[in-house]
Length: 231
Image (cartoon, rainbow, N blue to C red; front, side, top):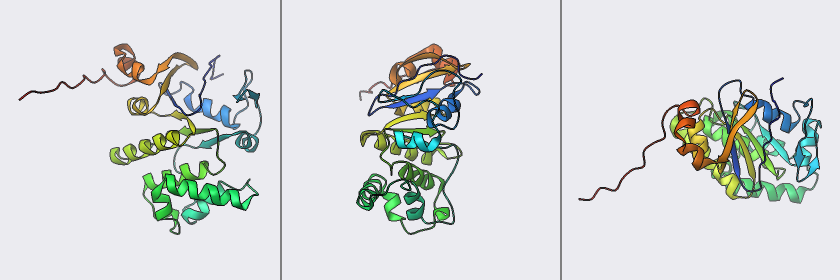
């Protein structure tokens, strides 16, 4: 038993981040939502439709796309081939072409490296390929598990910029991230998980500003606001 009666809602066009200590159940939430794990009780709803217990392919068809922890590109395939794998359930060639144009516009590096082997890209560029692949089916919600794992600070900043771009393009995002402070700076809403329960939730800026939460879960006190200097 990992999750204990939690409720998480991801409204359209928002980034919701799950933060908390190791073992809190963050990644388990994503696996239940995407069909990798079947819950013992409770429900998974997409636009009010009960999709609980369906397998990953059915969950994908319902509008839930899962970008797994770590790198999942096929290194010996081109960027184009990797991205098109995300459209394997689509039969309408015109629709596939439309989605290709969308993701290439949303992630310029994907379009620039379209014919290159994915294994030649940097870690951050590979992550953008994974994001593009997940958007090929035009999902309602993208589930992101630790997208900054193993990336340097500059690349991490780029990845979070792409998360914002996905949100601004109309896709809701449920984000799990160990870099809690950076995730909350990107998110609209935050949920702090502890021992399988939602300890507290609310607008991300409010959680960032809470001194107690900062001490317990965010690795220190909230940053002091900068003051203007008059010369």
